[in-house]
Image (cartoon, rainbow, N blue to C red):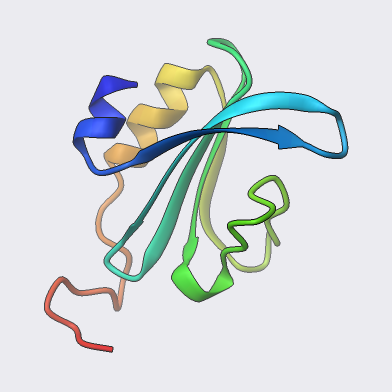
Amino acid sequence: MKLLLRRGFRRTVVQDRFTCVNAVMFRRVWRGTNETVLAYSEREALAYRVAEQDADPSDPFVVDPDLTMWQCGGEFLDVANQLLELPVAPGHSTFERK
């Protein structure tokens, strides 16, 4: 969790309205992408990357699979590490202006 925070992710507690379960959400917008990790427990987490404009911060639990650049479910440490190891999304540059 500390590594995600050092890499610019913000931590919040959110509730999945469908399952009524709380999760710890780590989210950052970086180089035109929204990267999110939803941790239900140490053993259950979901991570995904979508284009910034395709993210809905009000409901991070719903992600359109057709718009997802990458997603992974599994143990928290595994999915968080896989997300952090992803290369920069094609077409998203540090120097690109909007």
